[in-house]
Image (cartoon, rainbow, N blue to C red; front, side, top):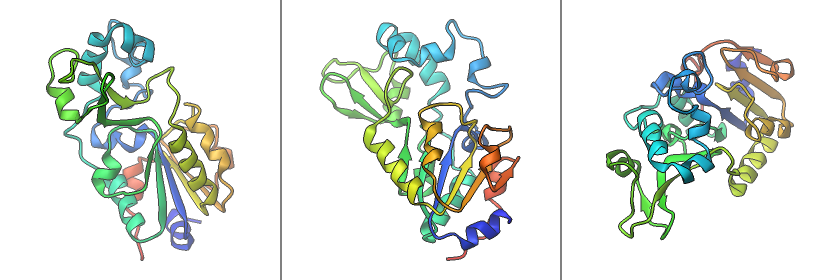
Length: 237
């Protein structure tokens, strides 16, 4: 079956996406050849975006974070737009994403489970006051609250656990889906990558430029950019 045929016959699709969904919007991926892991900093990126590093060296954390992770000018690409249209047509029930850029919501998706949080939400660690991403971007050094507390992005850093409510919602959506489309993820980051084992439906589709460990489980594997694939889908309400 083609992806178009699968989507046409599906009534309850869930989309599970990783960094490859947003690279076409100009947001760098972490693990590709030219991704953040392969760029030179005083510390490895995976150390910088850890909870321990944030607590011990918030100034260096924010220097990297503002430079590489706050892509506030990025716009939704064809993948984000197609998914929003599929939801509007009643076919797509949820988006589960490992991305923290908020582009699914910007495109119009409503039911989005952000496994790793969002750069768009930031809170004072002392009083809990909310700050938007632009405030973080514009701040000098470590962003401070009016109360003097340090502001932390609502992003899941290494060593931090995922939000339980978000995980439960994602598991529930995946377990009830008749079709699961997994795209733009290498499926190596756990516990997020383990979510596909909850899928009990009919069609598992994988869209990724590189092979993954789950390829053998899928009905359809497409080696192409996510936006290029989803951008060609005809959506019938």
